[in-house]
Image (tube, rainbow, N blue to C red; front, side, top):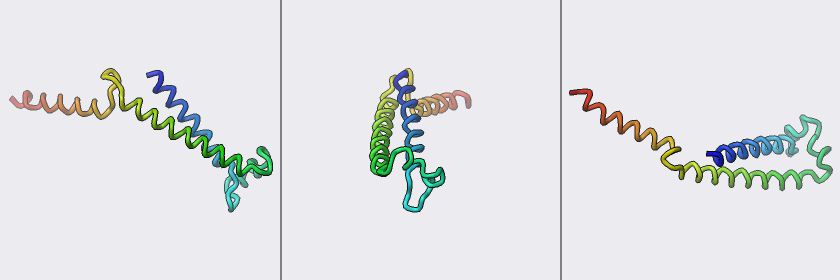
Length: 104
């Protein structure tokens, strides 16, 4: 449970960092990077494109690794924290078993 919460927090932080990093990158037509006065170039120097691109690739890789680990952790939960689909299937089975008894 603690691991799941930690992974969720990490993926949200990485996602927000990715959003901010992508927003400050200058595009060929200016984009949002130009809307903020070229903040990417003024903060990161003249060769900001290569550093921003490398940072984006690293953060994207981290995002996907965390997402895969989170999916694996959620998919292998014990009975205590079983997956949502398992709970739905159990409630449908219980409702189907109770339906014939109610008809009599």
